[in-house]
Image: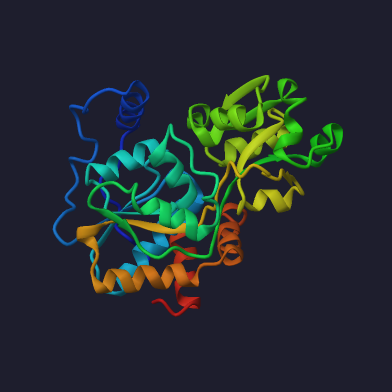
Length: 312
């Protein structure tokens, strides 16, 4: 199969900023559609991704698995944070996204809180069903999970005797936390950390969502606490400490395909269910290390994964 999955409708930096500003201000509909120049449509499925390496890798797995079933596919990688790509999805410009069940649920019900009895993968998946955007659905979720974490270096953990997020409460006002810019306003960010754990940090540095800026800042000491995803190879490579989350601020985060209902066909279901069944937390972590550590192309890593699991 071809490894050159087509890229559709690239977003300019100005367009992304415009959508971000719209969401931040709670304004009305934008007068310009950043996806309007594309040629997608008809029977072509547009697969999008968030702006971090794992999600782009998952996008490639979905896209190539669909192509193997003779489904016409275009890809839209690195759209932005959830606030940006979900607007594109709800507007119908994106047909399919690799999502994370708990994070998506928290986003869709905000500012309401997820009920305390909704924590397991199945409970989160079931609760998600009544909150999905109109005309969309989720296919069966994978056992693979990638959770938000608060992570510190071994030196910081030892200095402040940190084992869990709760242990940060007496020292947070001495520490700098780094994450993607959206972390400031998210419940699964500074808002929830204050409400659930009573944390008020000395400073918040807006960097990137679990990406190289955040990882690099923790490495060089520019920040003390980092929001890094649990499958990130930097955690193991650097022997960093992932703080426990006793209050379950970060719910189950199983990977799940979010798709427009009118894009679902037997071929699409078979392709995406095959990917979800093949994914585990371990093999996703290993595949992501090839992208992040070995600097391999996500297109190639995705193709290898699908071949190894008999999906192409």
